[in-house]
Figure 1 (cartoon, rainbow, N blue to C red):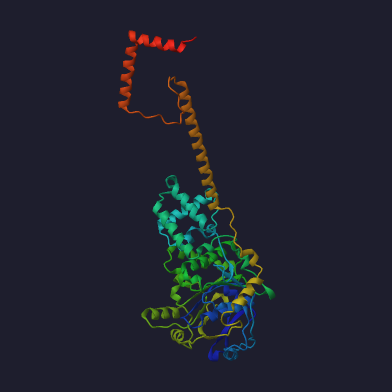
Figure 2 (cartoon, rainbow, N blue to C red):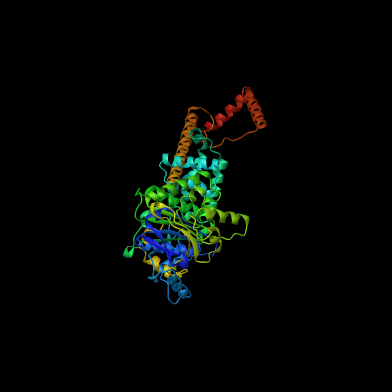
Length: 516
């Protein structure tokens, strides 16, 4: 089929080829099934097919297995015999091993090029989801973003947001009159959440250079689409960070890409593995945003494929928009499992040859119940399909091979080194430094003026005693000593008034002037 991706063989004897039509590939899809039923291999063969058709792909490697897309499979591999046998059974006549153009990304910068965004680009809604904030705390975060916009404070990394929240807390009385109450306890709670995010490695997500979408929507050698692999094995330790980042990337695609209607093939295909993490405990506003993006982003030429264990992990309104389905086996051990199995079967177009519910329970590893969109976007009849073998390596590549691919990538010079230009943190720090210097200068001037005033007043006052420096402290005398001194002075003055006093004075004066 010229405009399709070969998925596998269905029908009697698995000889009926099943195709994913490229002109309907942007109408999204679902890959579901229990652990160990073959979801990862299905994701791998779809990524191969899209890349070979010139469609870039973005996917997350949760278990570390998908790096094998960068290397061709080998006839010496353990499963070579099983692969060739399966290829012959489903009529995959041109089956061959091949490698595909891969670019590795990693939020932590260990297994791929660092992938970053800025705090401002992620916005208060997604950051509130990331930090699990309450409604009141989210309101304060919105105030902080508004203040940053009004005062020209760029929010690039986490320290920018932390510094801004400190400023908001210090100026809360003035800001509360304009934007509403700002509780210092709520500001402190947000700061604690940011500290937890920092400990989880979230600091590396925020900063510059930020990811440019054009660097993931690229064609490589021989016109093949670039396969972007996000290393997510370590990232899964912080599942909310993982889900929020992928949702941000999906939102950026929705906002920045132009409308192109229904193209002959997608401009980009986005695989969202472990999709249940996106919707667990998600607020209604966030689920509505995801639903809006899923409904409208197909007109931007982007196909979104959710990968999860149970279809009921995806909200019903979003599930109804996923036209291309690959349902691997579901295990019905509990009442919830049986209900999920029944609901999954009800979403397929019936096939008179078998009961869909029984088929979903019975399909083996590497087999699935598939339904692909046909002409005019009508869902195809459900088929039990044997998934085709992958052309690339099954399993991870070596660390040396990954490092060689990274060193040869032209994106290393652009993203590997972080930038830290002046932003809100530096601007607020400079403001605080300038304010402190101004306050210190004002205090110095006030002290000089006060000292000058004291000197002036001291110079205007006549005193027979020695004038002390204005800065010196006057000697303290007790009240008792003052009374004794006064009594002695009075006695001396009284004696001097008498005859004896006059004689004493004459004697003293005569002695002083004797011999003159």
